[in-house]
Length: 99
Image 1 (cartoon, rainbow, N blue to C red):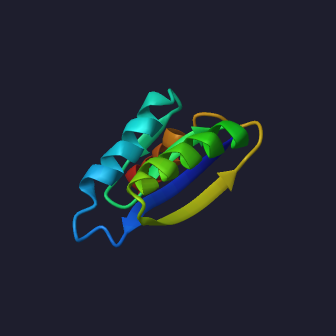
Image 2 (image 1 turned 45 degrees about the horizontal axis):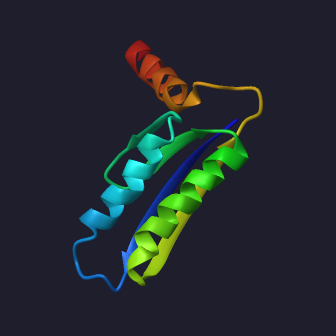
């Protein structure tokens, strides 16, 4: 299991990339895998192959208009652990609450 954070956007598509990014997020959400989107990244949790398939499809959707695509990908690979998409944040919040 792993958590992947990725950002995908078309290059040369003008200043607003909202429509392309929304299509990528739509694909992630339809995957059924745990995910969340922030202002800079979309995070998705799952097995390597299933997440890479989703990232690939999201990237292809962003590039469907023939634009060049920028993809940033980061992974936290931790076999045997699930629920870390929220678990990691919860542990930090608990620590902050104790201080």
